[in-house]
Length: 257
Image 1 (cartoon, rainbow, N blue to C red):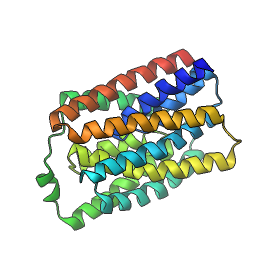
Image 2 (cartoon, helix red, strand yellow):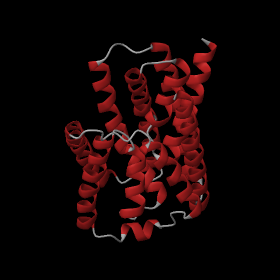
Image 3 (cartoon, rainbow, N blue to C red):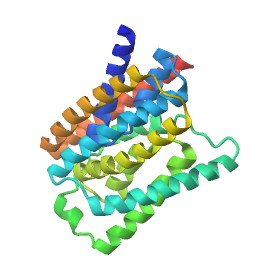
């Protein structure tokens, strides 16, 4: 039981920090940890990770929204597009042999972390709001389609893809990008968690509760820090968290192999 608590704590801490700082999906951290160190079936591990994502993303979105770092209108539009085209991407992937790219999310997490350290996002709130509302709405729909299709086709990378698109393509300042990303992730994770538990068996309840609590705790801590930090500090903190998590997950995946 002691090993289980330790693994869940470390997995929840990594997932919570990734969610609170960068809108990263908990599945990218929790799943490989539970599979490698507790020998848990992959489907069950992903279900627990998605369930952990729901509350962690929700409390992070609340914190960012409370600090006016959340674009609900365009985030909602993007969320609908993501959900619909994730289903479409999954269907297309089922028709294409050898389409899986298992390390896509991990590699992207690491590289995105390096990107935030080397080339921080310094877009201001004023510059972000100067974009025409109609243009922003169209961009949100197109971006949601792109992110959803890639996530469905590849099977991973939702949080990281959204953060990359919001900061690099839509020109969001970092705090609003993360806030909007975790807002979207709340609903995508809820959909995935419900689907997993409806199709599969009841998961390990101890692991489920521990992972949810630890992820929620660290996501709350990270989100509170992120909303008080300066832009350059947040970029560096986010970059370090992503780079370390990406490298750590690659090591965990290597151990698994």
